[in-house]
Length: 178
Image (tube, rainbow, N blue to C red; front, side):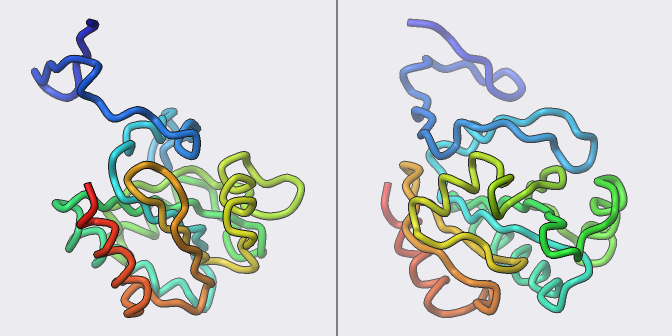
């Protein structure tokens, strides 16, 4: 049995760690400093994947996404933001996007570097999400909800606000499952 060190002084048997589902077997640069981050660190959590943009009519959804993250983080939710310029509404560099998100909306949930989320050039994660749901992002702030085991349980279009009862009810249902 091998040991893993996760966080300051936390040692546990590797067998105790949740396996990384295929949907999370991707690495992206963190938005703030572009250091590579494995999505496997979110294995065992309920994950809400969202493509974002700073200059979009849906940009105020950042506030609701941060509220969801803050409210449910302790119960196992993580919101993952993927800025994208696929719809010509995210022209800034990663550092500027990070500054905008933090200073304008107080975003604390994990954000990653600018990402292609639609079309033939979409990154493998977004290709998998689209294949699993039959729904690729048609605009910014498309949301995918993943269960703790990594399978996609729902896809929500841009007009679905983060506090929409259908989204929140499904999210709460997934959080109750272990």
